[in-house]
Image (cartoon, rainbow over all chains, first blue to last red; front, side):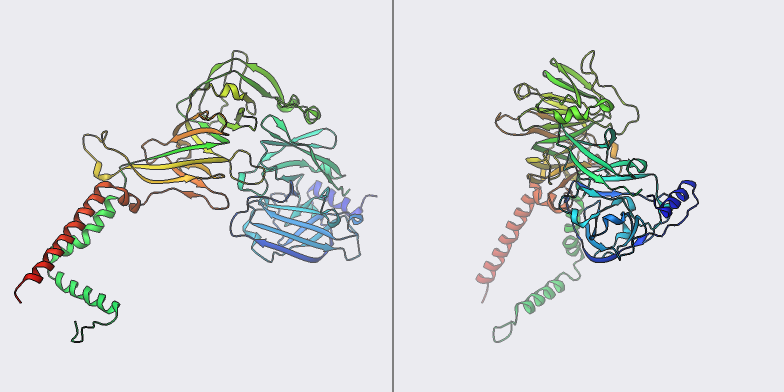
Length: 232
Length: 333
C-alpha cells in the first residue's frame, strides 16, 4: 500500500510546492567516530555510500540524515556509516525505532563527537544506511541524504559511491539491463571512494539490484552486487 | 683568569670571551662588516641557483604521461589492440570470459604489426606492467585540450580513449627507447588494490650556482648535485607547476629493463635546466606530499669551491693561531 504522506510529498516535490513530510525520528543508540589527522588511504568496503543529494536551491539542515527506511526494515537496529571523501572522518552510528512507525522516511540525528563535518561540501560526505543485521554481508542498503529533513529538498538522482580498489573503470547494471557508467572522483587515489555512479531515483524507488563491474587493463573483476531497498 | 685559576662555569667563560671579542672589534668597522657581511653574502649567493635540473630514474609498475609539445613518435613492436566497445559492451559476455587476452565483452581485438605512431598534444597514456610480463598502453581521457586528436595506429585502426595496446613480454624486450615530452606521474599511491606502484628509484637535483655565471655563457660549467635521495616502493612522483599547470614540460623515456627476469618498466625523466618549469613532488605511503626544494644550505654544503675556501681559511686560521701561541711561548719572560 502506498503511504499517503509519502505520496503527498512526492507530488509536492514534483510540482515544486515544497509540501513537508513528517518523517519518523529514530533514537540514537550509539555513535563511534574518529577524525584522523593524516589521510587514510584505504577504505573499508566496495560500497561506501548511497547518497540522495539535496536540490541545489535547498539549504542544508544541520546534523540530520534523511533515510528512506521502510518500517519492516526497522524492526532491529538501523546502522549508518559516514565517510568523508578524503578518508579523514569515519563514523558508525546505530539507531532504534521508537515503536511508532508511520512513514517510510526516517530522520536520524547525527552530531559528530570527533571533528567538524560542516567544513565539508555535501558531495564529499558519503552516507551508507542499512539494517544492522546486514552489516556483515552489506547486501541491503537504503538511500540516505546528508543534511536534509524533507523529501521535497531532494533531487532526481542518487549517487552510489564506490571504492573500486584501484580499478581502471567502473560501471553498474541497474536491475536487469540498465547500464550506468561511473565517474572517477576528483580526489583520486587518496580518496576513500574513487567512483561515483549516478542512479535515477525512478529506477530505484521500488527497489533494485545493483551489480558493480570493474575493469583492470583488459580484464574484468568479478561482479559485486547490492540490493537497494525500495520505499514506495 | 681569577687568582685561583678558576674562571667559573663554561657559560660564563663563553660570555666573557664574546664580550672580549666584541670590545676588540669595536671601532674596527671594516672587520665588523666582513664578519657580518660574509655569511650574508654566502646565503645570498646560494639562495638563487643559476639553473636547476631534476633527474629521476625509476623502476615502476605503471606511469601516466600527458603529451605536450612536441608530438611524440614511438616505434612499437607487434601488439594486440583492444578497442574499447564503449556503449556496445556486453557485460554478461564479459563476466563469463575466462581468458587472458582482451575481454571480448569489453573490447574488439585486433592484431597489429610492428608500427610507428604519432601521439599529439593532450593525449594521456597509462603504461602498465602486467604480472605475466606484458605491457599495456591505455589511452585515457585527454587533458589540456578541447578537441580530441586522432591517434592512428594503422591505416584502418584508430587509438580511441579507453582502448589498449598490449605488448607481449618477448616483443617488449625488443623495444627501443620510447621518448616523450609532457607531464608525467610515476607509480600509483600505495593502498589496497594498488597494482601499479613504483618499485624503486632515485632522484637528483643538479644545479649551476650563481658564481658560475659567465656573460659569454655557461656551457662549460659543471652542474653540481645538491640534493639526492632514493625512491622506495609505493612512492609516487609527479612534477608540479602551480602557476602554469599546462607547462610542466618534462622530457623522458620508457625502456625495457636490462634484466629480463626483473619486474617493471624503466623510466627516466628530466625537467631540463629551466627552474620555472616544474618541481618534483614525492608522495610516500602514509605521508603528505613533499615538494623537493633545495635550500641555500644544500647548495653551500655541496659547492666544491666554498668547501675548498672554507678548508683553506680554516687551515690559515689554525696556522696563525699556532704561530701566535709559539711567539707567546718564546717571547720575553
